[in-house]
Image (cartoon, rainbow, N blue to C red; front, side, top):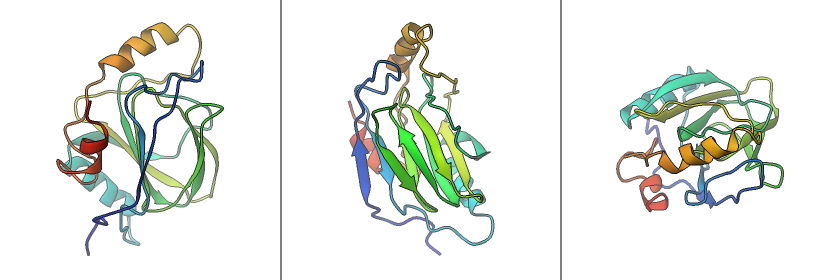
Length: 175
C-alpha cells in the first residue's frame, strides 16, 4: 500500500497578527487534504513512522486543546489519524477548518489553533522538526514580547513532515 498520496490538494493560509495571537508574518499554515492513506489497524503508527522518516520527532498521540494557543519555539504538524474535528486557526478572526482522517496540517510557530468540536474517536498525531521543543502560549499580553522574539528565531525545517526533502513545505516556506 502506498502510504501517502503523491499530489494532495494543498491549501496555504497566511494569517495576520490579531493582537492576541501573533501568528506568523512569513510562513503560511499548510493544509494537506487526504495526504495519508491510513490503514484500519493502528493508523497513528503510520503517522509516527512517516514523521520520523522525515526528521520530525517528539511525536505524541492525543487531541487538540480546546482553547486558543500557539507555540513560539517550534513549528508543529498534526495528522488526523481517526475521527474528525473542527479547528479554529489564527485566533478569533481566523478560519475554522474541518479535518478528517488522512488530513495533515503544518502549523508555523506563532500560529494559533483551538479545537471547536470533534467526534468521540478523534485521534491526532503531532510532531515537531527535529531539534525543536515546544512551549505553550495562550496569547496573554505578558508573554507577547518574548514570544515574538522566539517566533522570529525558530529555524525552518529541513524537510516536509510527510514528503521529505522535496515536499510542499520546502517550497511554501522558503524565505
